[in-house]
Image 1: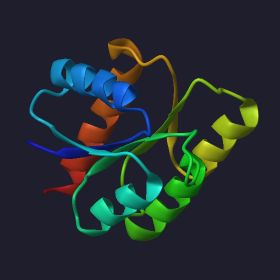
Image 2: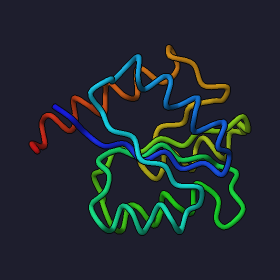
Image 3: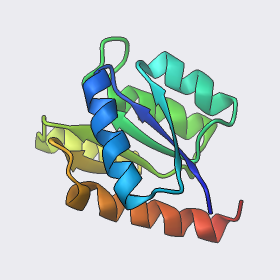
Amino acid sequence: MSRTIIVVDDSRLARMVVAGILGRVQPDWRMVEAGSGAEALALVREGGADVALVDFNMPDMDGLALVEELRGVRPDMPVAVISANAQDAIVARARNLGAAFIEKPLKDESLKPFLSGAALKLGRAGP
């Protein structure tokens, strides 16, 4: 079943890396990109995503603030926070918000478990 993942990162290169991984791991999924938290919120509010992959370090709002906003819009959306900054407090806050934490640099084997779990959760939830 085709799903849409929103990749939120102010780095175009980071979004390109995710696109490559997604093409290998979930080739039937569509990817939409957002370069900021505000852009991502607008897209999600329009119903433009089933899953979110959110960078922690962004200029307008950090990824955890964005996850809090996303929870208000789509409480059950599978979300992962990605960052090279794997401090215990950041990881714990992500988990408290019901989000996975994936450490950068992203690789197929680090992203695949999240994507597989999201696919299973969405499959149970229906279209």
